[in-house]
Image (cartoon, rainbow, N blue to C red; front, side):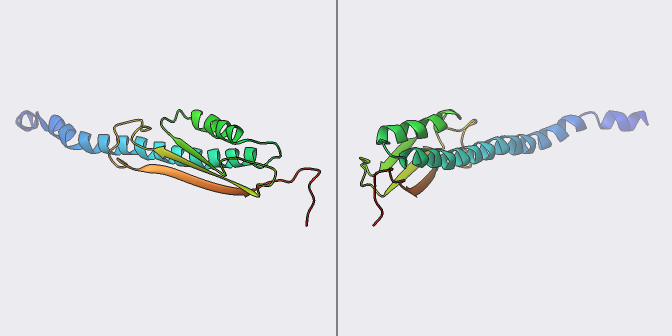
Length: 137
């Protein structure tokens, strides 16, 4: 029996050497996929909040961008772009479109392997609300 124990001395080390890379791969992959899912949900929420701010009477493009950026800042995004269409919101504007793009290389919790060079983007268009003094034709 002692002879068998002596021959199995390095088995734990070999098993760890074989299993550890797989374990680390799954661990870091789950971190990266979780972050991408969080950024995707944040982008969708940011365009929704931005559009909601832009459709009320008296809203400006700066208000829309600030509302959108506030949501993006809640998950510490970096280098995201916000595009608001039209560039000037007037009383005659019928709808507001907000587009958000978040680069995944700059916003990963670990070194990006699975999503390197990709980005998350979301776009939403909402019809504007009419003021109290506007008429319906």
